[in-house]
Amino acid sequence: MADDETHRLPDDLRSFLDNDSSVDDRESGLAHRAFFVEEQVLGRNTSRFVAEGGVQFNSVQVYALTPENLPPMASLRRGLADRQLELLKFRFTIDLLPPGRSYVSISVRITVQSPVTVLMLQPHLDTADTDLEKTSNSEAALEVARLVQVHLTRSHGNTARRTEHLPVTTALDLGPRGFGWTFEAREGAPLFSRTVLTHAMIEVSRGTPSLSGLFDAEALIIRRVLNTSIRRPAKPANSAAPFSVDLTAAPYQSRP
Image 1 (cartoon, rainbow, N blue to C red):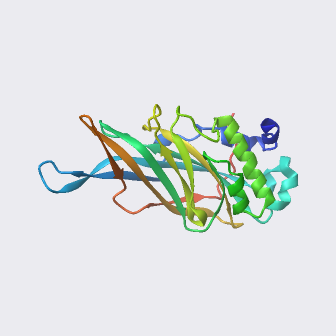
Image 2 (cartoon, rainbow, N blue to C red; image 1 turned 60 degrees about the vertical axis):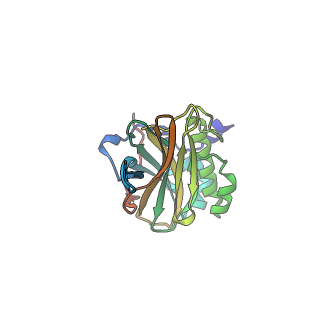
Image 3 (cartoon, rainbow, N blue to C red; image 1 turned 45 degrees about the vertical axis):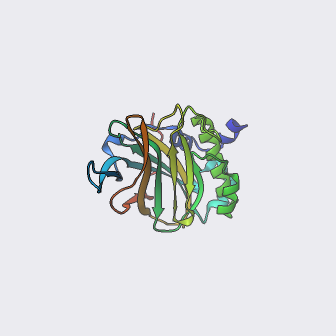
């Protein structure tokens, strides 16, 4: 049933969702958040902040969902005429930690300057149906978001609940001000330096040229000293980093 449903999505859209390697993260970067932890100075009654890890906001790819680029879904086109739907593919890279340290969790947050309606966040621990009903009055927008989520769940194996084989990813819906994700280590599934891929579908006012906002992150890091594990919160030393994404860029095209 899911296969039949997702074939209603245009070929380019399915290619956009399935292509995980079209951007070279080594040559891209919108923002970076370095983490700092507070630790006691040996032999003194004072503390200092030490850099440990961080997160690179590598890139965002955009797929504009318009009536014109959804010909296989003609029955939905009328509901999209006065709205602008944007499917966003995010890449974040988790920095290496010094020896003897490990991540317990990392949270990334995208705070936007102009209000947005979040229709879908993926990966997501819970099914999105209930949330979608609360965020949009457009049946067309909800149906597109549902089909995209079904496709991502099937093709990337993002089931409703992660198993212990992978770190857990939980979506964060911050309301009209933005969204984000939390990545958590589990037994047998450490949270190590890697590039992670997430998706969001948002609804904005028709004619919105760009998405501007702030990127922030925080973490919980364990330091192991002899037989002791010390959990320490880690945050950036400065304010959230600004970023901007062009929503008027040329339409995504699948690659051979």
